[in-house]
Length: 483
Image 1 (spheres, one colour):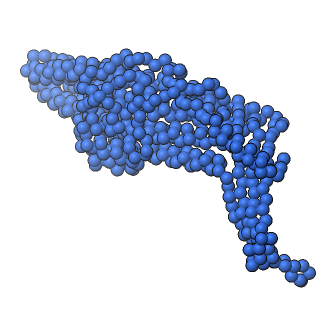
Image 2 (image 1 turned 90 degrees about the vertical axis):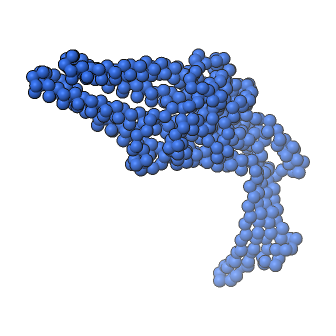
Image 3 (image 1 turned 180 degrees about the vertical axis):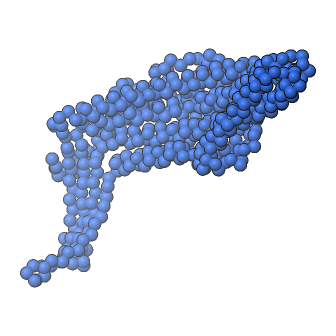
């Protein structure tokens, strides 16, 4: 229904307009209300020394210039990260669209008409009109839509930050995998050479009647078993190089020449101070994104409620209309109108109530996702701390075992050449040497990977340049009353 609005009525509508601002979005949920956060972690790293903070460029602690370059290239050109940034641009555009809904729309039009009837001219008509309309957001539906869009933008910013963390971590982990594959390939190659030498000695001893055919065939079998490991290790090397190239936005074979020279497995010279769990949850962008998602869902509930209230709109035109262009300046050519309209759905089959219920269900889902994200973040840190401690212990034991195995293998080979031990001793010590050295290389890579996971689990890896800063201690207010 439409009504002509008198000036007093219009004044009342304009006076009531600020009431729409009273419907604001509740603050993000307080962590402690949804998840029982422990006061401290169950374990803490002890070696190497702590850096005291969580830096945005933690990979520099590995002291590898090539790795630094790869991470920088990945953060600039990785496809997944670019997709995340495009999603943020979309969220910002939708926020601007929601902002536009709060403002009046104004347009202008001009027309010229010449008419004829029965072959005779009926006259001319010229017009110029300015029109405007405004949907008065009296109950705050549009404002809640804007609030939801703004929270979605903040969630998108946090998602970009989390994508940065993920890309940096994946790049470093793949680089560690590459160096571990190269190290294991070198170990297998050296052991193969040693076993080939033992096979040659066994063949000579057989010819001299000092060894049996069984010894020779066992030596040949052990040699070929080790030789069979090389293709798989070479493929792991190639696969890691290809993965790194794709991570930095290049074709799979683009980095082969740069990555082919074998290098030691890198280790972080400093590790982050684990701090307290609550501070970690404030640092991690995925947790903060989940908080903003809850706030956005809460705003959409309020928007759906406000949409059930009456809607008011104002529209008007101001123009000039005359039979000639010169007459447009006459006072009599001025044409104006103003219209006020109110709309209220009396019967909608329960659609409005259903929209509110749907948004409340979406709010509950976002709260559950927030809780799951928070618990997952706590688990990742605890797992990283435990894995780092256990893998360090395993590495030290394997290092001792590898040293002893190498000594035993050398002694066995020397004594076999002198006829002091049989070939079974040589065979067993060589197998043990290969197994322990290979295990040590894997454990070494596991420790480095644990360091990476600890940095990322604590929220390190933010990158400057997107207007996103990692607040280390952002304040939080408990959520307002349930909608």
